[in-house]
Length: 479
Image (cartoon, rainbow, N blue to C red):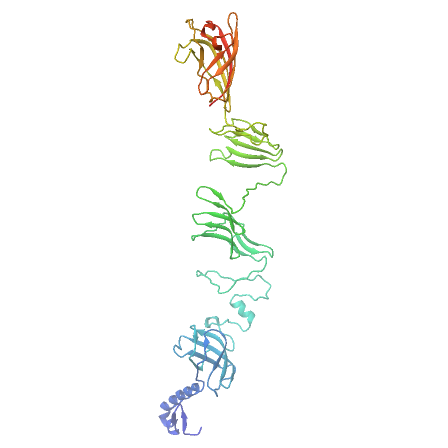
C-alpha cells in the first residue's frame, strides 16, 4: 500500500503504523475503512412506498455499487428503527432501484427514506431451530423438523395446533371442497359442509343444537335483501313468504296476516285421511275440535269432547247434541226461498216457544168476579209471532153470575187491530151444548166466546154450568 492514504476524510502515513504507533493507528484505520465502505451504499429516496413485503421500486442516487442480491435496509428517515424494509436488490439501473422486501417493521406509507447496506442476510449451510432456522438442508427435512406437510404428500394432512391457549385468527378465507367438513366435538358431533348440491349444518351428537343471540335476534334471509324468518329476542317469531310477513307469534298466541286473501290449508296425501284442529288445555288436549272427514266429506264440530254439529258432504246440517240457540231479536232467514204472490213483510223466523198457560176468567170484564176453575189444561206454541193456544177448563164456582164470559191472561199480548185472528170453542153442557167462534181483543191479553145462541152473540156466565168444561182453540198474532 502506498502512503499517504485517506480513509473517511482522515489521512494516514507510514509513521502512524511504525513502532508502537500501530496500537492507536490500526484500530482508527479499520473504523474509518468500515465507515467509508458503508457510506458507499448510503443513499436517500423520496419515492412513496408502503411498508410490507413484495417488490418495491425507489428512485435513488446514481453510481451506487448495488447489484442483484445486495442486502439493503431501507428505513423511514423519521423513525428508522421502527419503520423499515429489509430487502434484497432485484435490479439497479441509473437511479432506479428495484428490491424485494422480505421483512419489515412498522406500517404505513412513507415518502422519505434512507438506504444503506444491511437488512436480509443469506445463510449457507444449516441454521438450527434455536437460531430461527429449520435445522435441515432440504425442504423435506425442514417440513419434518417443523412438523408441517406438503400439498403433494399422500398421508393425512392437517394444521396441528395443540397446547396453545391463545386465539387463532385468519386474515383471509378458509376454503373447504365439496364434502369436506368443518368438524367440532370429540365425537365429530357438529359438522358443517357442502356436498355440491346442498349445504348442511348437521348435529350428529348428543344434546340439542342451540342457536343463541344476546343481540336483537336471529334472521334467516334470502341474500341480503329479503327476509325468510326472524326470531326477535324476547319477541315475535315471524315467517315470511316472498319477503311478506304471513305468520307471527304474539304475547297471546299466533297471528296470521296478509295484504291479500288468506288461506290456512290442511292437506293430506291419502284420500281417506282426516284433518283435525284441536283446542284444549293442560287437562285435555282435544276437548274442542274441528274435524274434517275425507271419507264422506263431512265437517264435524266438537265441544266438551262430544260431537255437536255435523255438516254433511251434501250440505245438510245436523245438531247431534244440544240446541240451536238464536239471540234475541234474530232468527232464521228464509229470504233465499221463493216468495208467494202476496206482499212479503218478513222472511225471518225469529222465535219458537211452547209451554203451559193458565187463564183468568172474569164475569163481564176484568174488574168483575173472578171465576174459580178446575181441571185446567192450557198449552201454547209460538212460532215467530204466531201463537196457537189450546185450553180445557172446568167451572168450579156455584156463584150465580150472568155477565159475559171474559177469558184473560193469554201467554202473549195480542197484536194491534188488523193482524189478529180467533178460534173455536165447545161448551160441554148437560144438554144443549154450545159451539162458536172466538173474538180476540187487539192489543190485549183477553178474548170472548161468540155464539149465535147468546145475547148479542157473547156467551154469558149463565150458559156455563158449574162443573162443566169448555174446550177452546185460539190462534193470534202476538205483538
